[in-house]
Image (tube, rainbow, N blue to C red):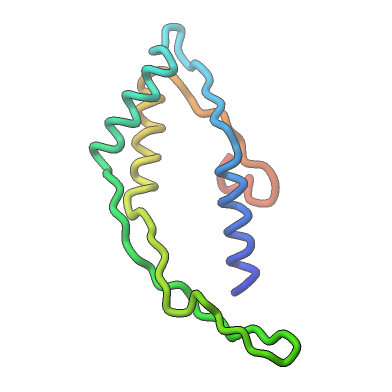
Length: 115
């Protein structure tokens, strides 16, 4: 379970650190900044942020030099945006309609899932 959480965290952080690389796919695309702003506004209007609380898994207390340190996150909840994936998908579809394609490529072990 811990390995899964660590791998997912690393993957998510690496995805956040990768800047977008947009490439024109038509001879006369919309200006990039205008297309990005328009598509993001439309995506946010159609799929607004809708945060849900999800229960965080509880872990056993940590023991350091015989002293138990309780897990401070036991019973806490993490907010997650239920519309995040739909919003991103709509944004990318809108950008393609405006003549742009995101050319970011995921590399490494999970590349086969996304390329």
